[in-house]
Length: 155
Image 1 (tube, rainbow, N blue to C red):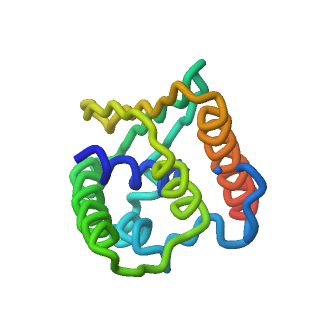
Image 2 (image 1 turned 90 degrees about the vertical axis):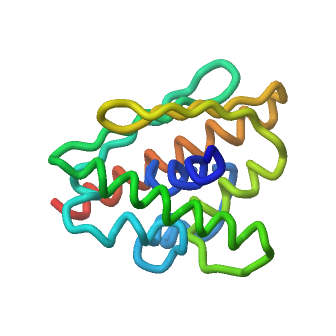
């Protein structure tokens, strides 16, 4: 279950970057195999907030879902688990920049802790390697910056 959460949070932090190219498609909610489940239910994205916070050895992602969309959010997790299983079998699927970057970090080895909350979830990703911590925190900052741009463009 934690691998699907990892990739969901990558999509949510939608809401990442140590010099990644292609910022125009950092988030591609319509074409990314991992992210698109979040767009299938009207209002889900607008009702979901994700905070990514730095901690000394990694990041904490706190996701809150409002407006009665928690069941839809949990269903998106299930879809992402299917995507993870397909990727693990070697299938090549379209991925956005955020999900691609996070997958690369995951492959370097991190520790994860995940818990569902009454209104969403909390996910903690850590490493004892400073270079991986820096990548995690850079990924989270890139997510934050790109989300701010998306919100500003909608105004």
